[in-house]
Length: 110
Image (cartoon, rainbow, N blue to C red; front, side):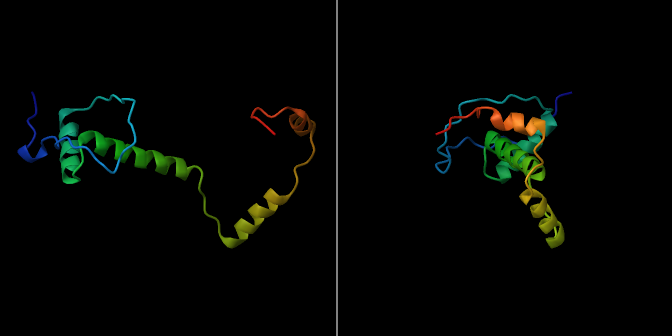
């Protein structure tokens, strides 16, 4: 049975956003239920965004949060000092480290 979205859940009107001049050159395709699309359209409309703008903004924020979650950590003062002390200690010169240091860098050098 086909769901009919509530009238105020219609897709938000397309608009050009002058504050977003970057060129979007790739497409992202996804599948959803009609009720999910209606929910997204309602939220996009309430946010005065197109469906695509709303989905991209929400997805980009979530992606940034996931990446920050895995790269940003907070330490109390003692743990921070211990962490910095470990970083400041020179590594033990193992055979593997010596071999690595003799290799040419894979990026351009002066």
